[in-house]
Length: 491
Image (tube, rainbow, N blue to C red; front, side, top):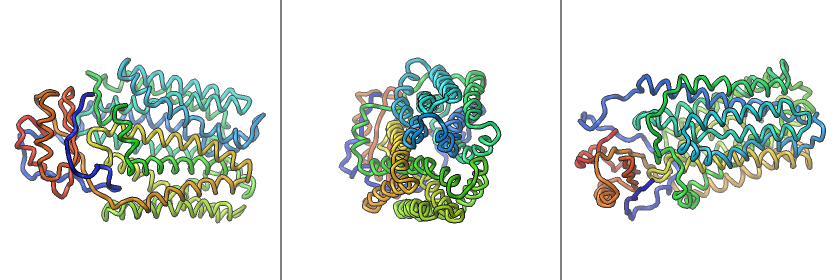
């Protein structure tokens, strides 16, 4: 992807920590502005089918989290460290392979790579279902994660949606992943009681294969593969993303968040069984009401963050709740009331952060590099799952449940220090413009002119795609100011 950036003396884009208000829309209609603001039938079919594929795959990964620690303990050769590794190993293979899978989809086709990923995931589930030792479960979980289709699914979504519908499409897929996590926690203990963990792995093997007819016969075929900078990964931008202090804080945050989640499920199910005397197939009676009630605690945090733009303070408050939960768990011992309170505190903070972080990362990404930024973010996320499983299991083996909880508390505490020490937020919006004509030779001149508009802070032109990406200050930028550029159109 050939691109040229705005030469600007403004501070770095990622000198902020928050999400700004939406870009103001001009009151009057413009001939350059598309009157169609909703998805067409083809786009709806694409987004719904791809969200279903993504969600069911993630459901398969999440479903064994609440029950795997108890199951793995009974397997030959198992230790707490190996049980934790079995829980988190899929994060390692997912982190290593998601970007290569996205690149392969550019070369061989989106549907072909997604099909291969779903088949690999199903094969890993079969390996885990047939395993009679902990090492077999570890191998199966690693193979599950190797079917890393996230980047390919998002790229296909970009291929099949117009620019003005792209954000909405990505939001639908993001919500489907969150829903799959909640469903997994609720149904996993029930399924474990009906069919056992081995049966759950067999069920998980069927789910992705059942999605193949939907992928090939329901999801539309892309007319062409697009290297959209807002979706595709670019190695050339990697150094800039990794060197950005604010993005690094958020990437470290998602690492800490998912490390703590995986470490929690290394210890909590065993604590419920051993200390509270609650059988694994009854854990749903705890998870379901706690997850539902956690929404009541999460919503006020998100309202404060969004309406008052107090993202840093809200993040700090959510992290404090999670740290408090990690301290309540070991203190509770066998007290069911104490464990429930701790679990509620944990998921209030976790759900709030899980909802905020992707949006923050997306809005802090440099112009035209959202795909690369989110690729790095997802790699940190899956790495946190891996480290949380392995390190949480080792801490559990050395110090019991308290070891896993205190490990997570220390990691979350380090993140809290980084959040509190962050600079004040600088709220910027993203603007995408269609470039009707021009090539690489004209990009410098065009971007130099755009940089003179009030509120324009950063920009990238992609001549091959006919797109210009801008980052703007919403309080200073007037969307109608681009009307003075006849070669540009708003999507």
